[in-house]
Length: 182
Length: 182
Image (cartoon, rainbow over all chains, first blue to last red; front, side, top):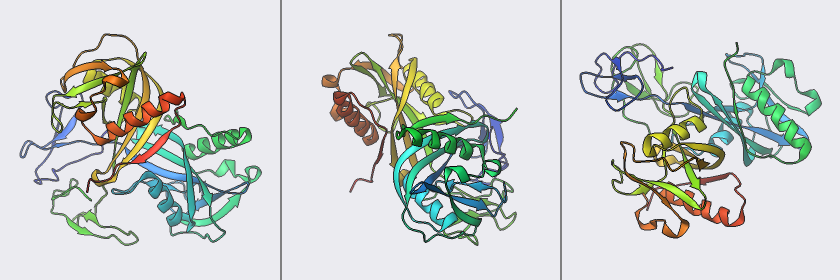
């Protein structure tokens, strides 16, 4: 589950793996300076940018899933709130300004140590264009969504959930899991 | 904002700080092997363990805030879901079994690069006792809460919000920020 680490970031010596006293899982440990290198999941924050009945999608200009469509999202940075992170990613990928409305869905993706937090958001104007990580940025109505070309399962599930909720007009906060494909 | 890193965990050479091409913030970078060492916020997961009108608190046996009261919570581990993390922390700190009911509140604590996610939970029985990080574990009614001895502001705010919502019977998912004290 842990990301490979070879050397101690404190002192530069080689690391070993062990279960520290009082702990219950294996950690990278430096026998030279005593540092335990904990590793924890990363948060990915993003949004569903809505304008009237349409949603703003980005077509990826980078791997993985080059050429596929996704919602704007990316790693939360140190020092930023989850909603600021979602706004920043939307601007980076789609050069679009959104007003974050509410947290909408959280997905555990345990096998890659990620937690996705997706917000509902209102696209503020038509002034958007591809950022450096996007080939194309487009508004799609529900009928136009390119279901066979969605980049990530977490985005597909977010969208399915969103359109289901939109039909009812209620958007309760949702928690889901994305499991490794068999 | 970044945690100090001296050496590259890939190759063991010294690190420098720079803004990588196409990036907009400073990262630790290894000129020897080219690795960029991204740092991201950590998630803390915990719960409000309810039994009838009472809440289970833990008195801390460790610093920071030794001797103060808190709700069970701790760092989310790789490979676990947010609710499994909250259950695990509750068992570690209070040897208590809870049923996680719903996500309740998310707090950004940007100045320490943490995101707290607190759940509502049902304490399943009276079989609880201090884990190794707790001096004492106790059920408090709202009137009994030791407000002057709560360990962390995020827990104080979670509890204030919770009792306010409990009075209405509605628990909408809440997002808040904890700022650095002036």
